[in-house]
Length: 251
Image: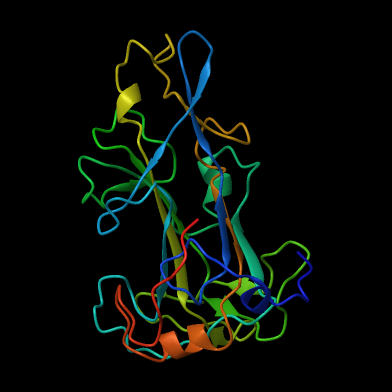
């Protein structure tokens, strides 16, 4: 879509929780590579609190760390035309992937598991699946809605983290909300190690051909209607938000 187009004004329906959110959220698709050489698409399952949904990712916009139920810090909402990407699809080593903070995996013992996290795919069967976590940078240059690499207009805090209130660098002085994706892949049906490759290597692969997990990445295209996201960020929202309306249509 042409970035000059206002998605929030043109769109008529959304699959997101709130009716004002027409943004685009994207991650790669996960496949299982079986011992016989066949590939099988891994289904998604809903996160805690979204039981009954048909998979999908959980998207967070945070003023403070996820564990802070008050969410009272001041952040600037993304603007119409804003886009960003985090991660690099071609990366295949930990040394490369350390360029990005907080793109990780959690091997789920149950749906409530959140730790430990790893930068590579889990190397053992995960009883309740694999959660892929993508957290975007939180400091904006205040000028560019996008850049050719879709990343340079964003930066991480120059010290500390978003959760600890670390300051933004002078080059990217505007503190925006922490955007985070959680996607739960139901790998449980593939936990029989007799199905895994004979050499014992982990069997999961991203749709762009990454067998390591280091190429995980996420894309974001802003599409909130009017000033609805800023109003939400100016209120103490946690799961539910008094300034937003639940979606009315379903697709």
